[in-house]
Length: 373
Image 1 (cartoon, rainbow, N blue to C red):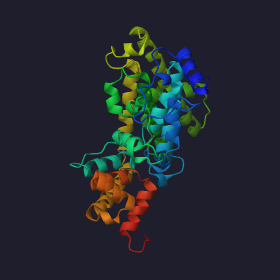
Image 2: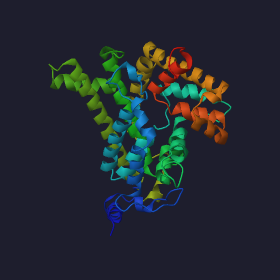
Image 3: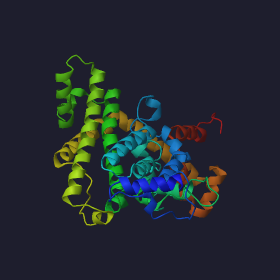
Image 4: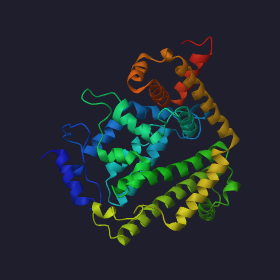
C-alpha cells in the first residue's frame, strides 16, 4: 500500500464524517496520476508554496508599505499567521488541516502591490475591461498564469481548493465544505490581531484610545492584575496574543455547538444549514466588529497610512497609463499574452503580480530620465 493510500485511510478513520477527505476529492481540471507519498491536498499545498506568486508575497503590503520597516507584516507573514490559526481550528474540529492550510496559503496570491489601495486602483483602471478582484486574480494565477508544468497551465489544483479560494463564491457554497469557512474566518482573526499589533508598534494606534474597545479592555484588565510591573511593549504583545486566543477559542467552541445543534453527521448535512455552521458567538462577533471599526478609523484611515496608499495608487495609475499608451514598453512575454487575452488583461496581470519594490523600481525606470531601463 502506498503512503498516500495510508494517509487517505487515516483521514477516513480519524477525521469527522463531515470533514473533506482527500481520497474523495472531486479531482483536478486536468487528469494526472496522484503522488505516491502525498494526498491530493498536500500536493496542492506544496505546489502553492513553491509557486512564484507565493514568493512575491514577501514584498507585498499588508498595511505598511515594505520600506516603512522590517518588522511589519507583509502579505507573506500574514498568510503564514492565518494558516497557523486555520490549522489549529481545523485540528480541534477534526476537519482536514491540509485542505484548510492550502486554501489559506493561496488566498492572497492575487493581491497587487500596495495592499487594498492597489486593488482599488486596478479595479478602477479595469472598469470596462473585465474588472479586477483579488480573489478572482488568485484563481487566475493558479489556473492560468503560473507556468511551471508542461502538461497543463497553472497549478492544476483540486476543485475543493479552487472553490475555497473564491471567497465570495465559497460564502454561497458554505455547505460545500467547512474547511473553506474556517479558512475565511482564520484570515479575519489573523488580520484583526496583527494589524492591531502593527498599529501599536508604529505608534499610529494609542493604548488610551483602545480602552473603549471591549476585547482589548478585557485582556488589559487581566494582564494588569496578573503582571502589574510588565513593560509596555510586553503588555501590548501579550494582550494581542490573548485576544487572538480568545477569538480562536470562541470560533472552535461556537462551531462545535453549531455542529451539534444542527445535528451535522455528514457533508450532505451541511447543505441544509442556513448560513454556515462555522462562526463566532453573538457576543464575540459583536465585539469583533467593534474592534474592526476601531482599526478602520484609527489605523486604515490614519493620514499617514492614506499617504502611503495614495502614493501607491498614483504609481500604479501612471505605470498602467504608460503601458496602455505604448504596449511595446511591456516585456515580450506580456505582449504575447496581450495578443491572447487582450492588452488590458495582460497589463493588469503584469501589474498585479508586481511586488511593492518592483512597482517602485518600474516607476523610476519609466519616469526618471537618468534611471537605467
